[in-house]
Length: 334
Image 1 (spheres, helix red, strand yellow):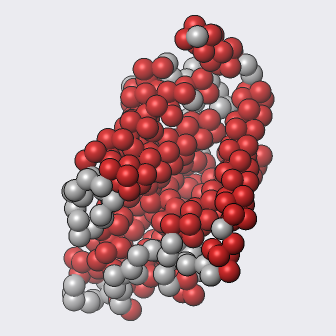
Image 2 (cartoon, one colour):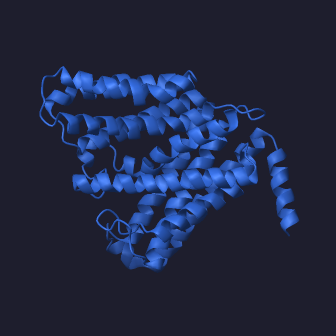
Image 3 (tube, one colour):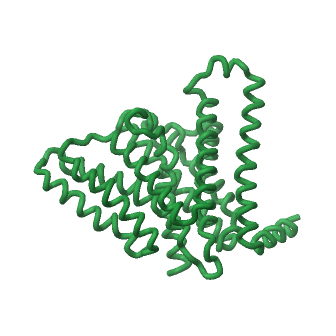
């Protein structure tokens, strides 16, 4: 049995890129279709949930997550057919809306306007232009070094010392998470390995699947095991055991998907574990920021932000993407 499974994965890995793409989207849309049909059947058996819906119920949250998954799958397909440049532009748009959600929930003043204009219309597009040019050495230091130093200089020129450190730290943090973190997604599309040229989309799919499974399994484990949370005032669903279950589930998912990557089985397990662990820890950090702002979702003020909870959907990926990208690049390219 094991030999047959190993042989099947070897055959999958030996196929060309077109076959891998077709199989990838069959798996992705097939799973979503199966879950959607299951949800419809459940609603038919429970008509009261349709007549009297509760927006805070687990069922309503599941439906929102499922809708977001469909949107994400379609966007991933559009990114694939539009090529690396199209995917980079699409992710840049995501970064713009995520940064706008983040900044909207933070305390800013008129003195911050220059720094915010620089963040949205200079730093963000420049970062993605550098990604598109595949200047990875500059890409990795542009925001942590140049933008990190430039933003407080621009803010200081506004001549307002009130809460100067706090105001600039929030802007810098938003740029790091929403721009620097997310920009590593399209960077995966452009990274090249020997004998693996033009297949970067599989690495991005690998990352998204690993992080998504880890989040779902951690949430399931926290609801069923009922262990004491590590940080109760930030998240009642985050415990050591649920984190381990989520990270290991993501690692096992990565192991099953190794055939679409340049990794061997052990490498896929280790890199998936790193990405899953980083993503779930990042989601905890973003929950802490939401608790400070006094909101449950980043999209609570949807009339202002224009995008309902987009940062909630990408928070874990903002942390996992740079960790995964640099781990892969360091290990395989030195």
